[in-house]
Length: 328
Image (tube, rainbow, N blue to C red; front, side, top):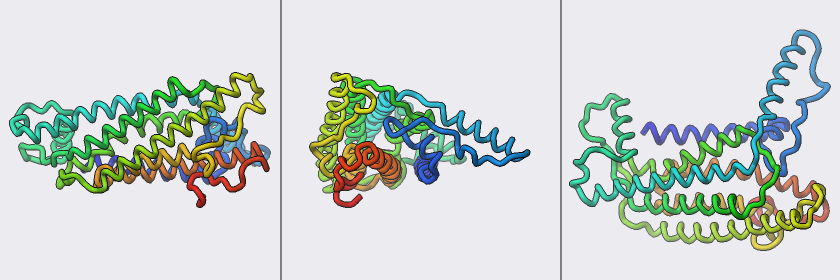
């Protein structure tokens, strides 16, 4: 159970950090915002620093924090997130299929361990001091394979969009956001199936919830693709007309943009909810991923909504919500 609890702790910690950073104006500007919503970080609380010995320590701390806040990387590196997710998701899918095959053909179970997760479970057993000769795990359900395949398809679509569709920009993100993105796409494929490897495992039979999950996944994926194409076309149009920086943005319209400012974020959350449903609502650790994704993208959606309202003023639709249609 070490793997499960470690994954859940990491997602909970990331969510708490994101909420804490979003509460303070300086940390929100330095560590939460990215892309168009990120402005040049100013020195925290100018003119509010005390004098004397405390001033020296406070000044050093402020300088150190501002130096760290200035460590940014191009937002175009988002493509690396999806590349990592596709590699990890693909390899783990192959690993899970092989384990399912060993369940169908008992002779394979007695062969030398050659599966990554099988080796990990043996290591965890050794770490806990177990003297059992066999790895006490449940065989993963075929629903786990389906969920992994859908996850891998999702990140491959996003990778294609980032590489071929999205125009290159000079937008930046903090290096901490980059690190969190890499960690997320390394761990999330494990979170999709981790619970299925521990007794009692998942039910092997088909679940009536899984088809609903697949339907939601298809709906969310189609609308996310459409919304991304709307954003990309607006950006390409501004680049083609050589717009100045002041008029290089336009109000997106069409599809779910008629209801919310960030429908692509809403669809991303729906994708992870649908993956959880595809597992028959058995992947408890995946719920922690859903929670982190919802918190993180809600914070970003709020920042985007405020940016739109500030940038376009009265020209921005007043009835357009940030993330959830007709609600918020």
